[in-house]
Length: 115
Length: 109
Image 1 (spheres, chains in turn orange, green):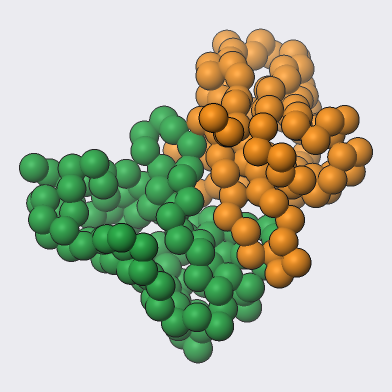
Image 2: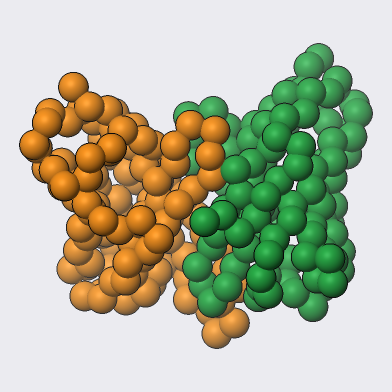
């Protein structure tokens, strides 16, 4: 079955530590996205990528980094510079349409907590 | 900043009743999308309505869009316990989605 796989489901970070969240898709989608969701709030865009080896900052990119070396993979690193990393992180993908009117497909998220 | 804002924040209904939630936004859009999120899970796409469309149906879901008022509504008819979830509207401007804070819907048997 096609879909998006995020791992791990739960992750704990110590102070001063970088952690990497994995996102893999087998939908053959060109575009991939990372969002952060805080309790009772909507999603905020961290980074997105429309094509391999290219990505753009979203609304809250500070303290995060990404890479897009393969079409299927878009890992997110939460660096020690991110002072409030506790949140639910969601990865999504979509095809890139001419009119940019495409639905996004989401993984089941990674919940990151601080030890 | 959030582009879409849903109303109400929470909604509790009984099975068989209809549920209506609204979304207002501030700037021009290419399309507006509605998503469902079950507790602790990712979002599932429900409906996409383009800026030149006024109404769209999918099964028990009906979405309207009024671009002059910058608002949209999602109607779930004949609700079921399985419809219990949070519902988000997202406005699409050139491929980037801006999500509202969502409406939490609880359907009791």
